[in-house]
Image 1: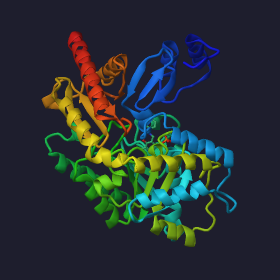
Image 2 (image 1 turned 30 degrees about the vertical axis):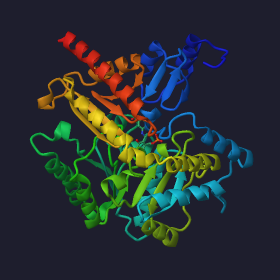
Image 3 (image 1 turned 180 degrees about the vertical axis):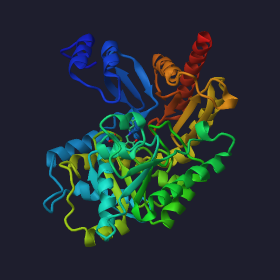
Image 4 (image 1 turned 60 degrees about the vertical axis):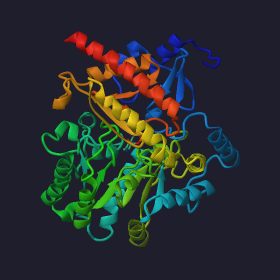
Length: 458
Ligand code: PXG
């Protein structure tokens, strides 16, 4: 660690006494002590105890260009010297903000022509909930108010984001979801597919959207929101039949299609957006994370010419905005981050070189006795740890074996995320073949250790 006034136990005590951590059991954490991350380079991070860890999770699904990029440091410093802050209210804006809006819309599907900037993915989804209702309302259709999301979808932690998402644990805290938000089942074949083929199951799950629209009355449904690939829910890659059917249903009932690109956007699937990977034409796309590779917080709502036209012609004054909407330093860093992705052909490499190599090696893990299924698209994947592979059954105590595997991985110098008993993968997009070999070798070792521990408990 760089010279510090505090030793590690003191820092851990201060943390336990003064800092409430997101998404964790804070009482348990306080006893155990937090891991303090001190520096990072490329695909590795180091903790205060000097452990070097291969980060197979890109921070939190976001460090797409890897750590230690001096170009991003320089971009931030340059912009801070010139103009550290100005807002996008009062008929003003700044140059990086304008350039970023132009650049990201040029990369997006053709009908997406506008961006509204936020500080995060959650703020983007809060913006979207108001935007879609306002869109219908100013066209004299205020009854088009309901939004449909999915169980086990994740769209953020703010009131609208958590309501649009379908996480039961989040709905329990704070009286969510708010009115006018409904959920349908997810296209999670491993758990729910039963005897159906993945494609038949995908169609069945997509048609739940049509049933829900008809149940609510199409005249009351404003929009449907979903992630191209569910991330926080466990990297659930829908069967190929799913998205075309969802698109057909949204068009048929004039329901706006919101495709949440916060994780898939900016190269994660080997395409610029998850929409390109599945050939979806969305009306609206929230983005964040990979837009700046997490170096500074920034998100955006990207939306179609149709929506922009209505909002500009009939919307009147937009009664919505954040202090940090279009923050010039965040925008400058996002711009340079995207230029790195372009300059170094990183998205193409995930599509045609490192991605196929990672996919091949990751899918081989399915041969391990503890792995019920391996799945991957581009640089986002999962393995399901299961007690009896042919049956696609879960462990009786969900979450225990996943946590064991995560802890073995950490001890082996590898950061893998566990959700229930799925091990999730989302590495920086710059991971090389040799680093992929290291990742697979460490994952394999961790699986062996977990398997031994599982056998020992029965
Ligand atoms: N949409 C999606 C698809 C996300 O994955 C958000 C919106 C919200 O973005 P912000 O920037 O407000 O966090 C996310 C964020 C997890 C985990 O446990 C995932 C996210 C955030 C926190 C934890 O996997 N994704």
